Length: 511
Image 1 (cartoon, rainbow, N blue to C red):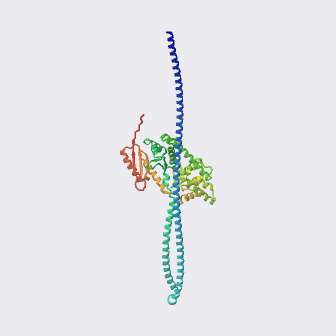
Image 2: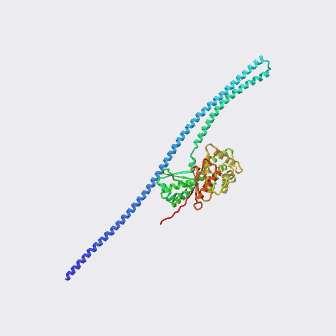
Image 3: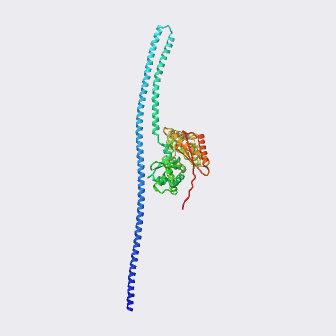
């Protein structure tokens, strides 16, 4: 019996040993599988990250290629338009040259007619002598009386004939001169007829797809409201395919908004916090660019000792237009003209050039200075330590103060020549912008008004009010009051529609 028990227990021990060995083997295989699983997981994660990186880089390259393609198409279209314009200009010039030749021929005909008249006058004088002799021979009149009657008769006939001929040729010459003058003016206006209103007020930003418009607007418009509030620029999202329009009177704000919008489109992550971050970056970069423009301008004119504040303001003139004329280009032109005049007169050339370049610096002044731009510019120059003669030349170029030097007079003359040349300025654009700004300022004067936007080329103004201060009944009265104020204080073509909007919005968040 004991041997059976021993055998039984031995069998159990052997089975246990085999089972334990199998268990160890399975455990080892399990650990191996776990290691292999972790390794595969790491490899899959690495491959996924690599794939995402490649996809992101490929997307950026495609966006860059699309942008370059768009810019190339725009450049090609502009080049084609410029070539077409040059062709039209050449045809107009050829036509004017032909008309000038015609006028020259007519002038020659007039000269010939005058010679004929002179010959006829000489013939009449000879006839007068013969008639005088005949009258003295056959008449009883004295020599003096006969001569007086004859001269009176001949002079009457001669004056009548001359008057007819002169009137005929003068009529032809006036008609031809008038037609030629009209053609010359039309050609000059056509050459300078750049779309300054669009260029000075709106900027078009291309989009990769129309789907991007929805991301720009954001949920319930939060992105576009944050963008407009931060930049001070109106974002117009309409039916224009793959594009949005930025509209603002201030060209610097509009340029910052353009840079920020393009970067948001490329980045793809559009939300209020990201908009604020990109806006600050673009603002910093544009201010650096403005400073570089100012420094380049000073170097080109070989000016020295210009204060940093004036250098920055000079760079701002690149983005400022006055009567449709770029302020920086106008300042360069005035400086060159003043330099030439000063050199010819033998006066202080550096002083004239310096004063001429800075003469319109008051047009880009900060909001703490008020008054005519000439006086503001003089005050700005005086604040940074410019010489008295420079300050006086700036302040006196529109005769708000008395000119104290020859150089001040030269600056005024150079400014007049630059602004007065054909096609240099466009009063229509400047008055148009001032009218829109005045219209918006009138609406903002009333209590409860938050924003006022002039649209439709000044034919409509939209007014947003605070709902807590203006109820529905007051909206009607407010619209009528604004209309009366506009009618009494402004001159405008056609009609102006005033739209007052009152909106109450409740927002909550489910968590």
